[in-house]
Image 1 (cartoon, one colour):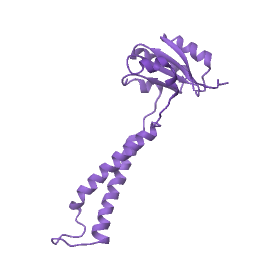
Image 2 (cartoon, rainbow, N blue to C red):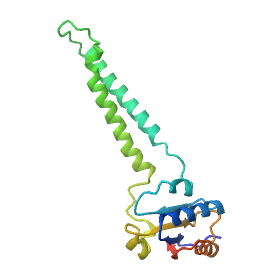
Image 3 (cartoon, rainbow, N blue to C red):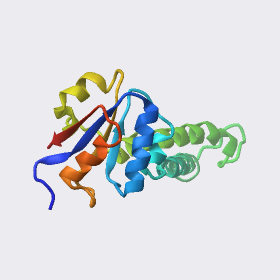
Image 4 (spheres, rainbow, N blue to C red):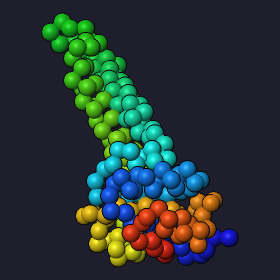
Length: 179
């Protein structure tokens, strides 16, 4: 039975190595719904908490492909089908003239897809998060401390045993995170 009004349990660590070790142990223990917070990126942390590879590169590729095809198609339609003009004896479909627009619409499609995809996949904008309820987190998360949160949505989560588990990982402090 899950406690109501509890987002999860948070533990504080002093070094990035302690955080990565704790995340590996929590993952090995069977916890899957967890998150880690650090003042700087830690490369090994994604693997430690089980974050899957992102599909964003594929989204950007297909966004760029769509943008390039749309730009080339627009030029072809305007120059060849809708309003054909023979200028300087060139053929109507003079593809070298289409390259700048094709390139720019490819870049535009890829960059718009990257920004919108990143926001969507990260669940942003997120003006409020339950971890903001912990004063220690607000004071130190961006400066000098490292935090691991096991969420109550995790099937293995039980408030008392999860708190005890995080305490056994040599955490500097363990807190319940209210919703």
